[in-house]
Image (tube, rainbow, N blue to C red; front, side, top):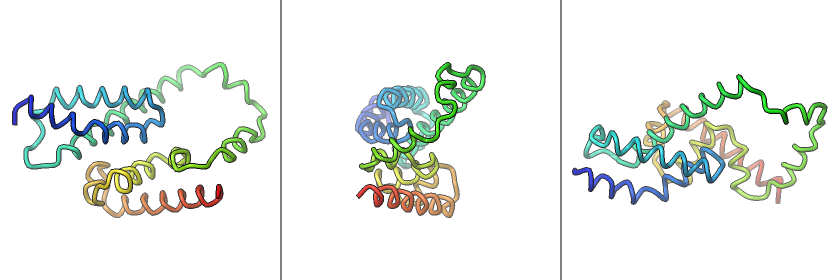
Length: 165
């Protein structure tokens, strides 16, 4: 495959990549940044992709690895400097949590409340349609771990959405 053909294949994946990025970041601007970094890295290392394997799974794995690396960097930055507004809610008895619960009325908000591991599993299997084995490979976990995360994620979504109806 030529680099041009590879680039064309990446373009066809963009809507799915943006959707997955949005599920990881929970923010449109951050999702666009994550997509850009993913495409850049995929284009730079396009010759490492094994022909005959799923390009989408390979690119999803790149995206997830970038997201993990960026998350670690953010965590280090947060540990170094505490934002000034951290002191604003001292003594808050859950007013924000009550308001957040009252706003939970759609799947997007319910998904955002899932732990990262469950949200990733739900997004790959239920939203993107990957088979369990493919999703497990993308996440780098055994199939049983993926299944467990998926079951817990589904149950949490049902609880969240059931309470709001």
